[in-house]
Amino acid sequence: MLHASRAHRFLAQRPYLKTFIKYIMHPDTPYQLAIWTFSGRMYGIAHLRQVGMGKYLFDSNDLTNPKFKPGLVACWGYEDSGFETYGRMASGKAVKDLELMWDMLNVTTGSNWSALNSLIQDDQVDNGRAQPDSIVNCPVFTAKCPDDDFLLAQIGVLDELAHDSNFAASIQKRGLERGPPVYKLEAYVKHAREVCSRLGIKVSRGAPYPDPEVIDHLHRNASPVGPAHDAAEEPLALYTQEAAVPSRLDKVRKPLVIFDLDGTLYTRPPQHLEHIPDGEPSGPMAIWTGSQKATAVQCLYELDLGLVGPQLVDGEAELLHPKLLALWAREDLGLTKKDFVSYVSIVKDLDKMWSHLAKKKLGNFDPSNTVMVDDTPSKLRAQPSTLIAAPTYDYPLGPSIQTNRAQMDSFLLALVDMLDLVAPQSNFAAFVAHKRWNVVPTRDEIADERNEGVRILKRDGVPVEAEGRGVIPGATRSKGGDTYGRTAGRTMPRIPVLNSIYTPPSDSSTRPSSSATAGVTVPLTHANLASIRAVPVGTQTDEEDDDNRTDTTASSVNGDNDDAVQEAQQAAANGTARIPVRGSRRMRRTASWASDDHSGYE
Image (tube, rainbow, N blue to C red; front, side):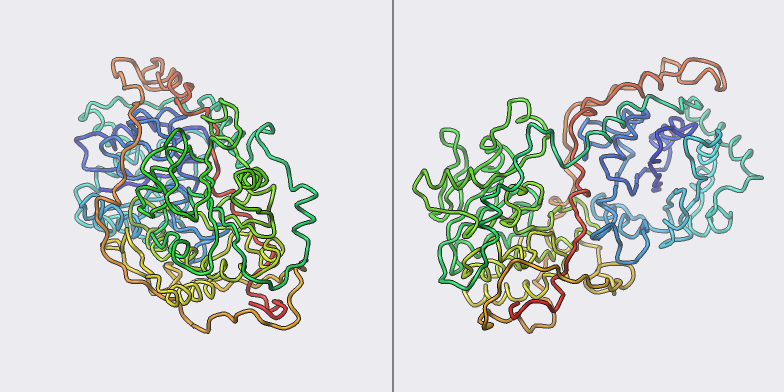
């Protein structure tokens, strides 16, 4: 049985939460637990730890992907729920579509979840509208609401449902889609106490208002912008002047392309850099990642791209490809020792890279002949018009709507066309700013570039393959086409393009965009199940429960002191770390490439 419970955004735990979690996780109950919140996954996990439930659910202190205790099978957040750009879903209003979770669990655990043996518990009925007969609605719980017995009554509800062969039919028959009827609440509570007594679970109302210090710290410090001492300068006047020089068509030179790794390259399906070793024209390349250099080398070597050797040599990467000029990492950012081992926002000041390459006599590079590909625009705020912004690539460990979408990732194919277009320009920065490539694009906005990129690769004899992860067994594409939603996607209004400093050529001599009307679909194969199973991380465990101590409050059934108070006031080992907010990196676009104001070029 799957029971999906919502992690409430208020930091007052619902009465009987500990009792309920102990019941769900008990080895003698027929249930398994999945948690699904529209908050970020790390916030849901932090909330559960902060109200003292971490030691019952997790076997490690990892912030975003802790090892689960037996009985917990999934912990989903915003990033797992199928949201698209700007917090929208293809189906319109947000929904928790159990088909996604069923597909993931059935593949990765060999189970057979469906409407016959599953339910979701949520305080918003609309969140379960994809499977309306599979939701048991719970009353909205906030810090201002009075105590209730809902979670205790829910134990009685679940024990009754455990004997039924069709949960959806039973929920409908009992009228539970709007929550347990009030007139039956007392009977469900009585039944729950009997069940807990039989299983040896102490009924505890718990400590509803723990110390909010951990989450307060999380809210104060979770930001993509690091401390002031770590922030690089905003664009210098010189860079601004150079970027403002109008670009024109020029002879193809040997430009510099700098790639970020994490979120940009080394988790993508390996269309990885196919155009760099083989495509023409292409120039020198550098890599600059915020990860440590040893980690970057290991990841690149495992991708088998022929770029670097297997390990560091005298603290530096062994560069194998003649076009790879440098591999910079966290060691090259000039961080303090404390910041080097902490999560702090970094800025990649390309002036340092340009100076290094000039000193090594590897070339003279500047904003006119350099672009950097990165999934975090804030890291290029010293040279913002030199950035080609990539959508962050985050491949889910289990099959979901995002997994299927990830397999059809098109940015790297579109990047082939972007680099081909920018190569003959006299001022890369001005051209990139005009094309608005320094703002993260949507899939639809780069459809033409993707098709043209495929054409270029085929022209140059470069095979176009989506290797590695294939289509997930049991996950099927919806009738909504490329949206992968439960219903057809909505058409978004166009936003006019802002004026640009770019001066287009008087005669349109640039290559027209592809006339292809549909994207090129690459063949996909079944992935190895082992590659999509979540790998447990971390070895430290939460403090083991000691049931010899009492776990009730002074206002509860037997008046003992509650160990949950002390437990809830103790921050997790990772509770004070600086934490990134991935979703906040998505800035709303102020312009659209779909506008007709392209002044004679594509």
